[in-house]
Image 1 (cartoon, one colour):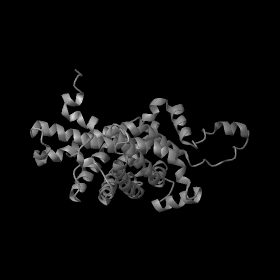
Image 2 (cartoon, one colour):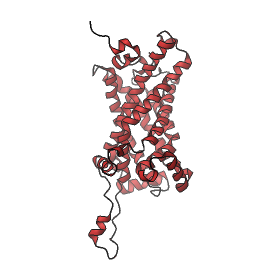
Image 3 (tube, helix red, strand yellow):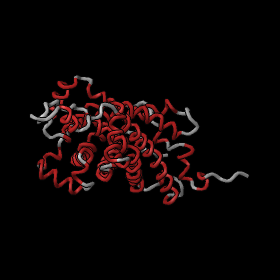
Image 4 (cartoon, one colour):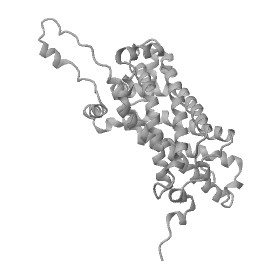
Length: 340
């Protein structure tokens, strides 16, 4: 006879084979969009100081030696404590809209992709790719504004000033040149965040039900049920960070270097050829160029520069975002994520 499957030997593994709980079935419902928008704006807004530190460590890695405390101290000393809120406005607005669309379209696409592959989890991954792509389009202008303001404090005195300069120098579609770079970050991030949370919540519901309620999730104590989204979100943050960090590095490199260097005349008494030779290499003009610039400058490990700061940032975002999202869904009358 055939050997028993892993799911049969350990029932909590069943979601990986047979799908997740009914609470993650998705559908066309405005409440997914509302819960996603509020949770994303809140979670990204309160973590702006960590995002500032992370972006500075990525754009100037040699200045901070990979140390988050050192980066924090230097930023506060050189730029002032309020600089830690640089980019707060575009972050809240951009990620609020992005969160509404990402969560909403992910849930909307789940029934559309149901049965496309033999695995429900693979169907969820397809839905997350669509949601991540839609979110990327929305995020391009907001993310460029944020990165420009953090990487170059002299870029503009305010968010509106930064937006006006961006439109003046590059036109209304300039930010969308970075769409391929944004996709490199957002699609893996969305796959890691949305799908992992569904699967892990279903896993923890089943595990806690077996351990505490004789296998019946409906009999779980309210405190145990409240623990599920926190456990799921905590594990999800690690998956999403690792999958998307190389893309985040490419995105930062692209937007950091997308402004062209001013052409200056060679110093008096110096030949033009020698002056040109002394100039730094040109900034990347494509996603592939940004990737090559990182690898050429710092090696393959450069794709993981600032990982410590970003993990703190991503964990702070995802844990709060997904717990709030799950709570808001239930307040609005939807089932909790992964529930059976």
